[in-house]
Image 1 (cartoon, rainbow, N blue to C red):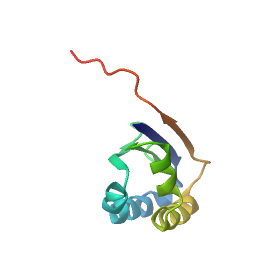
Image 2: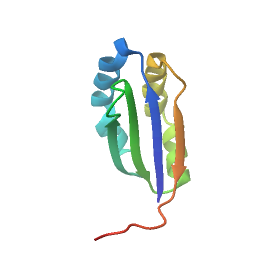
Image 3: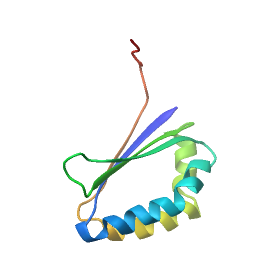
Image 4: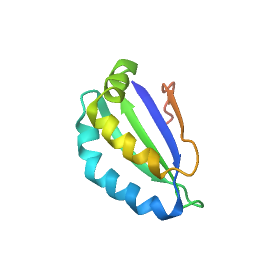
Amino acid sequence: MLIRVVRMTFQEASVQDFLDNFEKHKHAIRAFEGCQHLELWRDENQHNVFMTYSYWEDEDALNRYRDSELFKGVWSFTKTLFSERPFAFSSKKLQEVNS
């Protein structure tokens, strides 16, 4: 499993546009083959900073999504709303510690 985090900073005036677009596409993204989990996070102190947190079967699954028309459409709109360059990284879980 691959964990993907994308941190995005939006123009203050564009936050609602981003949220509306995410709401419109979230189920299609989550249903994309290889996507196992999807969350949207908002920074506690900077309300124009959001992160997507997703699980993918593997890097190939993530790359198929990134090559898809769905991603191209969502991303082409989303990137027009940024006030800063987004930051993304992929990781693999090594351990989960339970109580």
